[in-house]
Length: 232
Image (cartoon, rainbow, N blue to C red; front, side, top):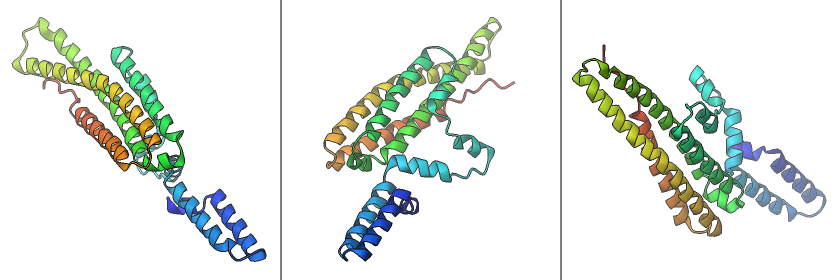
């Protein structure tokens, strides 16, 4: 990031212009130019928007899976692949709030963006994991429906246990998907408070802690949403 920021065209242009004026005009322009250039490099390296541009440009996928991720399929697009229904509606509503949180960070001043530079990737991860949970929930619901239809014949104990387990996972996933939208609304309010009081590091730590907790729950839930069918 520092290398990319150092060779950013606008930063290099300011450095060159400052050096030229320092040589033809007066010597005190040299330290001023160097300080200005260093400040621009530092701010650019910590700018989340610039970071995403550099990282997406420099990504070198080595496997087909990495190639798929490098295309940066948005969580909104993945949500549109979900079956139509209540789950998809809840996920799309949560992702709408997520985009508003991202916009609130990107539209804030440079100081606020620097304070919240760690929050942006956490938000992206939470959005992706929310869709993962929804995908797992729909797959589990499909298998549960098949198991329920098989009750016309005497069911085994294993099948009944699998059905109960899937139904419990679906209930937990529904609760988490509904709660994520409300939690994102709270995060948006926290971003606004941080933009007003950017010099208070405790607010940024609280925001990151909330995002870490949300990501941990979504990741743990997505790992348990793989439906287990009755062995043949």
